[in-house]
Image 1 (tube, rainbow, N blue to C red):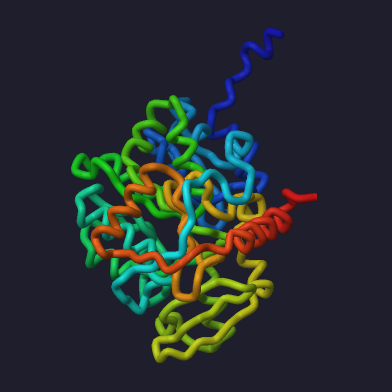
Image 2: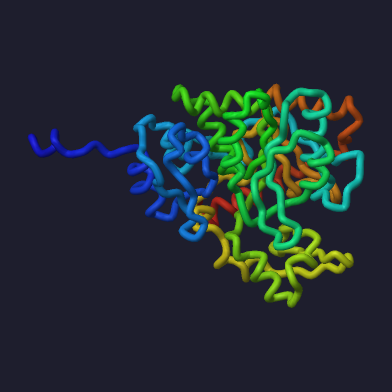
Length: 340
C-alpha cells in the first residue's frame, strides 16, 4: 500500500505513449502537439508518433485531444450527423483543383467575406512534393495551395502559431478525419487549453479519407514511374488506383493495393471515412464527375455554403449517391477490423 502511494504518478503523455503510441495506433494528426501549452511534444516522422522533448505540466490537454484515446466518444456510423448533401464545384477554374475545387471555393468565401482571418491548409513543395501545414490569409495563396496531398495529415501543428497570433481570431481549417476528430474532441472538452484552440476554429472542413501515406510515397512513385518528383503535377486516389498526372498532361495509374506498405500504421485503426465531426465534409465519392460530394453537417457549415453560393464562388451540380459513400465507408470499416 505504501509503495503504491509513493509510486510516481503516470503523466498524461505517458498514458498516451502506453495506450496509443507504442501500439502503433497514433493517427499522426498532431492534436496532442498543437494543444500542449508547455510545448512538451514533438513528432517523429520516422516512428510515426510523437515523443516528449520538455517536461510535462500534467494539464491533460493532450489526452483530451487524442482521437485514438477517445474513440468511445466519437460517432460510429458511416455518414455521421448532417443537414443535407449535394454535389458542388467551384465556378472558377484552376488546373490544381481536385474534383471541382469545392473546398477552395468555400475557403475563398470565408476569406473574401471576412468570416475568418486565415485558412489553415496543407501546402506542398512543388519540387519534391513534400506536404506541410500552411496558414493562408489571401485568395491567391489558396489558389497556389489547391489540390490533394496524400503524404501528411499534420495540419494541426500549424495551430500552435495560430494560437499565439492575436490577429488570427478565427480560422477555417481543412483536415482529414483524424484532425477533424481532434478538433471535435476539443470543441466538446472542458480543458482550458483544448477550449482555447477550439475557439479559434470557426469553420472545420473535413476531407473524405480512406488512408494516408508516409513521406516515402513520392520517392516510391518516382522510382516506379521513372520520373523525378518535380515532373508530377498532381495525384488523385480513387477506385483502387492512384492516378498520377505529369506536367505534360500525361496520366499513369498505380494500384493502391501495391502501396499498402507505405500507409501510415495508425490509419489501420481509423473508423472514420467522411470526417463526421466537421462542419462540412467534402470528397469525390458519391459525386458527379468533376464535382465533390458536400455533406453539410452544422448550421455553421450551412451558412458558409450559402454565402459561397451567394458570392458566386460555388455552384450545385446535382445530388449525391449516398449509397456509394456508405459502401466505401463500410469498406474502410471492414478493412480496419471494425465490422465482423
